[in-house]
Length: 342
Ligand SMILES: Nc1nc2c(ncn2[C@@H]2O[C@H](COP(=O)(O)OP(=O)(O)OP(=O)(O)O)[C@@H](O)[C@H]2O)c(=O)[nH]1
Ligand SMILES: [Mg+2]
Image (cartoon, helix red, strand yellow):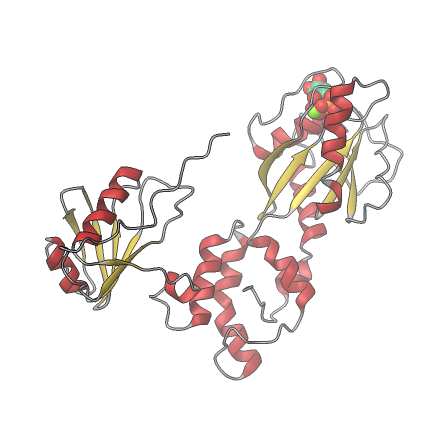
């Protein structure tokens, strides 16, 4: 995988002949390392002075306008407050570099405040800034309503507005709910040729992993984000275990096995004729047993869920079962506050 170099976060040094600062700073708020189509830039401070110095027509507070951005691009300028505007040019590296250079020449300095409040200056408090950041980072749809409810739940719990210094009433629950923000890792293991990769493809709704009716199809483990009943997880499909595997396959399996201690949940897969494998000693992550290829018949061994990736039978139930293994219903339905910040 190639990673693009991040666009410049550093403005070119201002020269001796440059104008004095205008009491306004800028920062790039959208991710530099994973740019999308549009970048989000903030101007903070004397926004009117900065826009004038940059030759950008004024934008009244509360208004949104399409503006020529110093001849480099056209983009939307949103005037949030007197001291805050948000610019959304295209996210091309050269556009951002030229804008940064123009800001610097106009005396609009690069803001290096990396606090959460610095990143979300529109927030009325540090707590609200942390809440906005958590909403922005959350991977799972289920996170959003819960995060939006937190100011009210904390205020009811404390009898006053919360700060970021609050004690966690239930650290275990907070850690599990944190899986709504950062996807937990689910590692699927089992014998060869039982349908492990077909299950991943069914869960992700696309052909992520190669599937074939022969053992040893999956070599290097394959990861994909999948939605388990509203919880986004990082699913890792591993090579199957089988006697007599060639050296490269055994090495790939050893690499996949090394992931097991870090797994948040291990899914032990089998089918009617093949029970799940035992986990290597010392692996303490919770695990669930799932029977695959249910259209061929149910197994005699005990299982937590049974599915057919070919027909789709049991797939929704599997999602609920695994989501509960990572995030029990009680964690979601409890009206207690969640310490969602670091
Ligand atoms: N009938 C039926 N066949 C399935 C199902 N899921 C997978 N298969 C078939 O089982 C065979 C093996 O599927 P894979 O997904 O490659 O199995 P795997 O466990 O990933 O295999 P390895 O990577 O070699 O360990 C293929 O022929 C699939 O089409 C299912 O739900 N029902
Ligand atoms: Mg496979």
